[in-house]
Image (tube, rainbow, N blue to C red; front, side, top):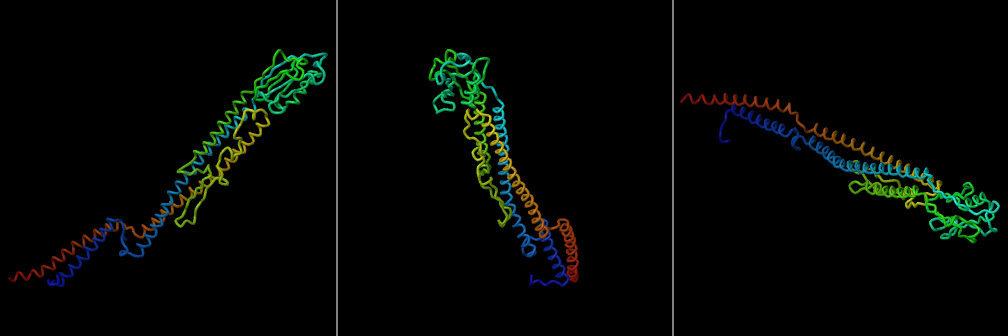
Length: 381
């Protein structure tokens, strides 16, 4: 090109066309990419500032996944606690049903009396009462004997009630000895004592069945307790189970200076043992109302503990959800700030392109007119 001589007018119009073409190329790039700053050459300050803002937004976006998993873990624990609460309420209902049940079995026995008292000298007449083949208020394995010789029926009733409080309830049944089995085990009554001739209880020994309703309810209690422990074991998410004392750690910012550690109280598992519940209920545990009342107190305490833990997890869940919303809004703010520094106005760039196209056409026309002056020389030939 340096070997070709151009007139001043042609060269000026050519330079204008070249500048217009360069500007059109730049405008078309902005329209294609949507950015007015595509590299550090376009605007170093805006380019590096926007890159920093986008990098921070990306780091915070990566933390959102951890927050989402943390929320699901807390919700899984909350589901487990709700199920455990319902299970405890069922256990409470079972205990109340046992407490209210009074379907005790009774049997009346005819005893030989002489002048209103049992025959025989003191120590000669006894009534043997055995529970489940064992004893009541006596050495284990040895049926308890009650000496009723020389006593009236009412006095004998009092002696039996005193000796077997909480297991047997004796009464005067119109001249007969009535014995009520107020336990869950079978009761045997006989006159196989020191002197079997002094006291006659029918022809043979008698058996009074235990309270089968309470015994069955004890079994139901154990089944519910087992389900409670299984519920706690199954309340995990992504390998983390807060009900087994696992630690959940959630990071909130890109520097790691803001985080939340979530764990059950004292890091203990939530199960029947840590809740202070009877872990091996037996039928005889339901014999006495006072014992059942104590179990009801334990279950109520367990319900309060579970509700308290549920409240603690709920508070943590609220914190995580709040930070999740904050992070989303912060990411949006950072990305918007970066976009304000780099994004192009499509309307403005389209108008610029239209103006440049018009200018290009005008420059082409001007260049054509400038070249006509050189072409006029050809008319001389």
